[in-house]
Image (cartoon, rainbow, N blue to C red; front, side, top):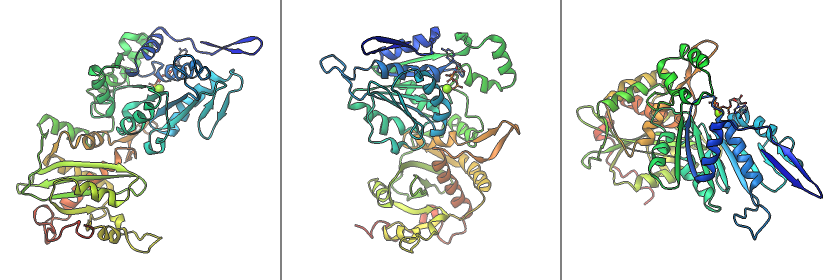
Length: 447
Ligand SMILES: Nc1ncnc2c1ncn2[C@@H]1O[C@H](COP(=O)(O)OP(=O)(O)OP(=O)(O)O)[C@@H](O)[C@H]1O
Ligand SMILES: [Mg+2]
């Protein structure tokens, strides 16, 4: 790829990238369709290719001439991966290498931003905090390792950011099971106009030779190999904590339509993030011990009144609200506990006992077989539960004890609190499931 600069003379600058034949095919599809979903095997050269496409789009954008079609002053492009750190590790060096010889280019290390001489700008971002990306507009967005990004990233943040300038978006990654947003996009792309999808498996591309593939196969489980190199969607997340239990529920038809029973109270189980996600699971507990998980809410960056309103908007008759032990923490500002503050808002929490995380996970594994989940309303909850996992310690060749803290942690914590509440609080004088605190309207404090 080359770019020319006009002063009195023209200088041709060679960008050190020669696309491989299949990367060239991807560039063509990217030019042809506004939305592309690419499921591609590991080490294909996905990130390399996508950064170059972003750069070419930035350099070729018509940022100057109003009279020509596709006028895009201050062209803006973004590369997003699951975390800021990952974006820095994966893409920043690539971007700096490819732009090194372009005169008058400025790199802003702390913001991972590259300003090009034509006024175009490329920013590398992390998806761990989607709301921090609000308020931007984009002409082109590349989302790498999509399966590890939160489901809210595209619909709530990126899609609106593309609207001003009818920008394009490419989703690229290696499959990671069906319970995540990447798979949803893959399915959606097959039937939505303006969308394109494409898969490249390692046994078709010849990017990695057979010897290397055989060596990889020898050191991986069949499931891992099929996922990483053959782009199989059917593998579960490696190190998944609840993957087996959720898979069993699927096989037994327990992820289905679970309508609200108006004759029963609905209990809620909360993981509360003051500056982070709040996740609320809503369940009805049958006399036979069946746990009917009918609904789930997850959102971030809001105070309690927002969640109270969301609950009020449902048609449910609430029983008890269960919250984590940190509700008893005293806020510095006003000297009252979060528990008291919540009660003032009309939500009287019962505190779930604090037990070691491993015990909570065990309780959750014991509880899940008793659950039925509403397939639609609990979709995100189920995806998160399936994703929740322990990282693999390559050196010690074992899974680490502590689960990875990512977008799936909040719902998984709420589910753990639910299991703890149900198993540890059985001896309550008022059993939570049926007779819980229904003498008051939990919202009466604020009509
Ligand atoms: N067109 C190309 N020319 C030269 N080298 C390339 C090209 N495309 C990719 N590579 C090299 O291939 C390697 C893998 O590239 P890249 O990191 O983009 O792969 P990936 O598919 O994103 O991998 P992963 O699945 O691990 O994220 C890198 O070392 C990169 O330098
Ligand atoms: Mg990559």
